[in-house]
Length: 264
Image (tube, rainbow, N blue to C red; front, side, top):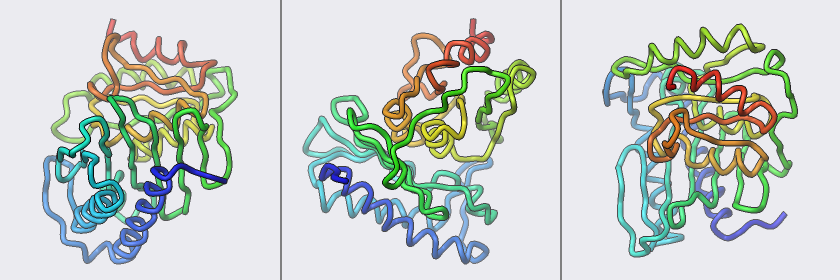
């Protein structure tokens, strides 16, 4: 299977960072932890992973810009292209020894995401997509779920942690959605939630107050897998405003109507 030079760089970089994170994950109790905000922690491993990714991407594409969770934006000589990176999505899981976290790398060109990689080192699953080339996990083509009935569908979301104001809205979402569906899961990694929608493991995902690095790679992986992406609040752009609904084409409108009813 042939991939573009950029996608090869992204996958190679994600694997390199993943190997280092796996070593730290095996010694998670010894990590040095510092507070970044209420309920949100940065580990030594997190910072080192971002630096590993930044160094590798700069070496391969020195003119591209970079937006990372830990270091913020860095301008490049090429103003049309930048990497958007979450070096460790699922930090709380990582710190607690829960094996559900990922590395997310996206490439943005002229404001559009054109390639994305989400790598789960624990399961060795590399979700990836390029514009117009479909979505894959490792070497297997993936498609969104074909389920059409909400009552048979499983969804995912994130619950706001301390300091965020969207908890009441999310609880109202759950109250409306749970009676209509087969269930809702909350595993603590938005990038993997989107990857699982793309792979047909979930029928849909929604969340508020997300950051660009949480979702950039997942956006193209879901759409290339045949899924639909939209904002929770009409007129918003998910990458800019951070509210997102993702689902297969058959249930997107019904799912979105339930989630958006509070916003009307």
